[in-house]
Image 1 (tube, rainbow, N blue to C red):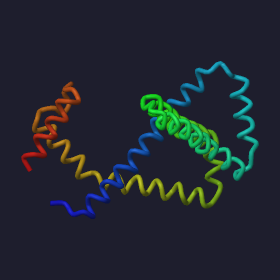
Image 2 (cartoon, one colour):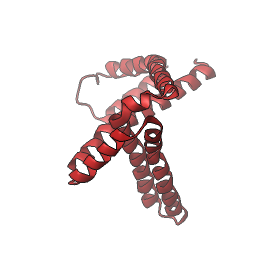
Image 3 (cartoon, helix red, strand yellow):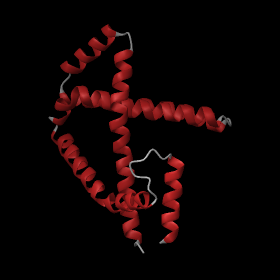
Image 4 (cartoon, rainbow, N blue to C red):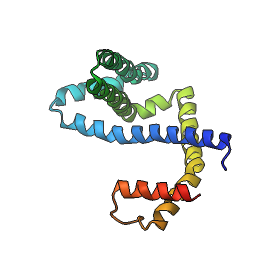
Length: 175
């Protein structure tokens, strides 16, 4: 039986990897949306402004999506309070897309300038180490899932998600 400490560390690793996945997923998505927008002059202006900014003001621009998402989340909480659950969930998800997507876009444009700030570079290096740690931490969980799917004959096949979930459930109950 796994110890509580192991479970806590694995949970922390999974949360960290989920946030990393969101970051990696929304960056290209928002970039694609921005590329589709017919605002060539506005995008060129924004890129030129970001290029001219020194590192610390660029850091403030990098934090704007966080502030914007918090304002949008307040609107979602108002929708929840009024009993509009679906609207609240959709608005909350929009806030997360804004936060991750726009921050990822600004990071992509200004990465070198932001990394010229010593503490940002150290934080970035630490986050990369945390990502490596999280990958190592969940390796046994991945191996367990892979074994269960192999035993059920669902690795590499076109089996649906529910067949895989049922296989994992059966595997967990046997242990």
